[in-house]
Image 1 (cartoon, rainbow over the protein chains, first blue to last red):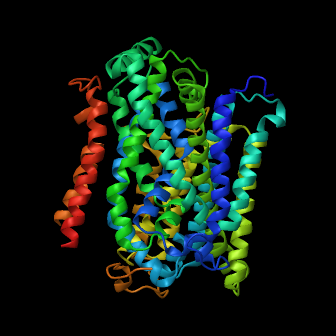
Image 2 (image 1 turned 135 degrees about the horizontal axis):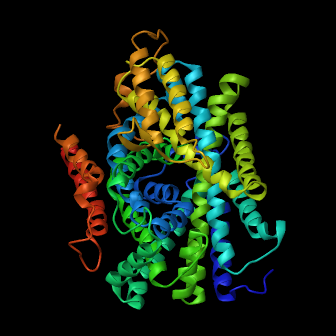
Image 3 (image 1 turned 90 degrees about the vertical axis):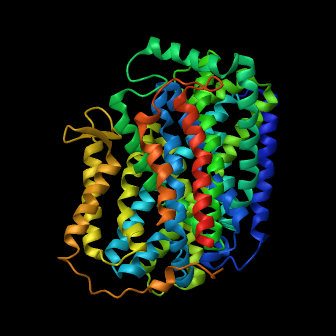
Length: 506
Length: 57
């Protein structure tokens, strides 16, 4: 089981893991407030300024799975996998324009989730439930994939157990995570994010300088990759085939529209201490996008280093084992594993917040006290993480991958209700709910391929588009056509002035 | 209005695939496809910063 263990790498790995574990438990006392209130446990008391938000959102959005999956896609197909870069260019103008408005109205009315906002804005419980359901089903597989990212690096350390024992390190890591998230809430991932992000910056800068110096420069790296794709053929290469233009651009756009609607992004944003903290982050967060771009290029570095792996997700770990001394590979793997902990914690908190606020309270126990509300959310965050672990232990990984792909398609279907809702109450709740249902069904149906779930599908034989984007366009059309017919008389809890964050701080 | 143009411009560039889908001209060994997109990341941040300055004035 541990005969082939890379000891220097493992020692460094375990050391950093121990450090963040201690930090996770200590975080409960940081900027402390009464942790038996949901906005304290689940939003860190909305006390995170620009800096903390930068680390937290960076740690939360650029996940371990991303660090493994993006270079894996580049390794496998080339340029097409680089859609992650235009995608990260698109997200920040949207963050800058729309989300300070959401922060302001959420602060004014103590909204903690997207579902809270929709319930207040449209007075429509059905729509609130739809938002809550979408968030939870899209987040669950995403948490599971963080575990996949973590398991890839534990495997690369040389751990090769049989059967259930092979999952032992992962299980231990996840139980520890579950415990300190339970006790410290959002403060734990916020604090750990400092360590995670610093480590990621260090390993990326080292790799970007050192690896090309060993492989003959970037020109040689790209040329080596080109030769691999020439031999491989098909839709691969250093640039896109014309037929890939539309899928590439629509994937970037549709994924960008979905990103900040995920419960974990929403949690990170609403925990900011002001609207300006969000604006400043829209300017500063692209630093992580640059890092992601270079991580993506590690897929090509792996080709140039002669790494041949059956599972492309092993390309980056193997690259680091080959190019760096054991202790630095261990440092890198620790960065990736800790990179899984931050988003997994925030995702479970986001899912727990929305389950408690938008399902349990309105439908099961309307007279939930604040203390019991926070207690329930803590419990749900535990259940969510155990659920993700069970998925990884007992269900094929492909199932989580498929669900994650569908999750993106589903998540973007709440775009009209949330983003349009920040500017206008013209749409009616019922029309938005029907539009959402149409988008969910259409998006899922389009993704249903003959042999596997597919992210893109031809539109009227004209071009090929990302299913999430195609479905959300249909969703918007339906909601717009039905809104004048199904006028809503429900009260709007919010007023126009509530959306202006200027002069408001938490 | 000006700030929406500032914010929209990097988005349009990022989605306009034929504009950057080529190997040449290379820069430091990077094909154009890669260095132009990587360069667009800090450029987009500058545009957002410009919109921020315009707004707070």
